[in-house]
Amino acid sequence: MNVILFTWLHEGAGDQPVLDFLSVIAAELTPYLVIACMAIFWFTADHKGKKILLEGAAVVIFGLLVNQLITFFYFHPRPYMMGLCNPLIPHGPETSFPSDHATLFFGAAFALLFRSGWHSKGALLLAIALIGAWGRVYTGLHFPFDILGSLVVALLCTLLLMSLRNRLTPLYEVIIRLVDTCTAFIVSKTFSFKENPR
Image 1 (cartoon, rainbow, N blue to C red):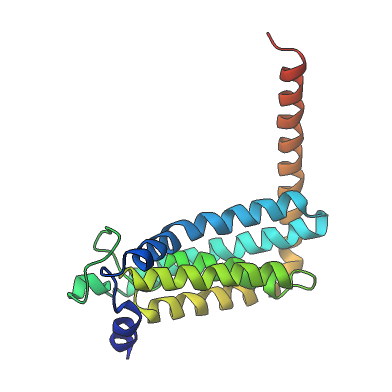
Image 2: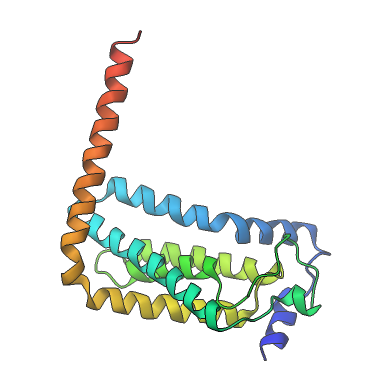
């Protein structure tokens, strides 16, 4: 089933210049787009919002650690390693399951999607996640089940971090104070330099 789905989603890859280009962009740049969105959300959020965003970051970090644990015990070749395709993006012979990129996508999306008042931002990240996930499969880097595995990891990590929210809140508070202090220092030094150039 995994190979059948991959073959269907990957069909035409390499022979459709426009779609090939868009898939490479989707596969490679969407992680940076998610990070950029989270940064914009941070600088436009209130104190409560920043705690929500930190929980999202924690979900992503924990999800990536879970991925590393999975790959330590289980190795699955990527599609091109099985001779199923010629990838549109050069990549080393690493394990395919689960996808770190997809875990990042879905972890950030779920963390916001499940919070009141953040549904629209979470939906935006989920849309980016789906586009990025399609790109990872279409370019031949991952199987559909790799993406599904990442989705499950991201969902479970989101639920776990939600259950630990009260215990982690003091840590989030410390991080917020530290980041706000550093940001204020950088801004003050920048304006001071502009007002008193050497």
